[in-house]
Length: 204
Image 1 (cartoon, one colour):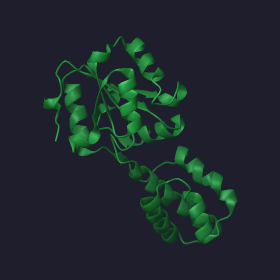
Image 2 (cartoon, helix red, strand yellow; image 1 turned 45 degrees about the vertical axis):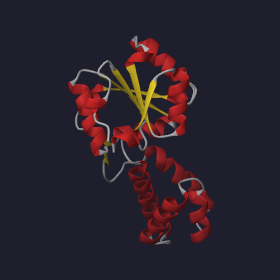
Image 3 (cartoon, one colour; image 1 turned 90 degrees about the horizontal axis):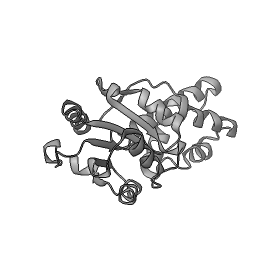
Image 4 (tube, helix red, strand yellow; image 1 turned 90 degrees about the vertical axis):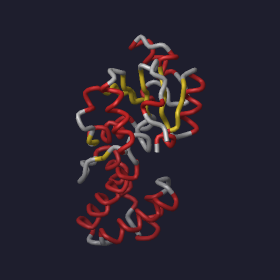
């Protein structure tokens, strides 16, 4: 398992993806499903929120988030007009519980800050949704050290335009950067940009 002490001390800037790198994305999505199920029970009386929440959780764990509303609609006869509510919640929901960083990532972020290195998040996905996640994450005071960039506002990863922008804006050199991600897209992004890459799994 990697620790901060194992990282090249010459690295002065660390770039992270958000979902499943700094926190588990399922912690966000399962709260969205809970909120949607309770909303639907409130306005329609059926299905029961507990039943729909359990179904959405199980379907997500087996099949992922793609097509999840359609699965629930087929199983429970949900009116298609609620599709918009379902997806709007993904962007605007006020969560019952804050999102919590992976312990290893919290320790890593804290050590980076104590060492006076720079922290960046470059994240793919809907910028409004990603910002909603960031705002509801318990950063333990680290939020003031974060610089956040939404790749979709420039060009989604693995295109490197957003990194080129960050390099210029903050006068960084490629050799100074370590990118930490969890997917083939992140790895391709780092390789195309010419920066070093570590998979977050190596820290666990």
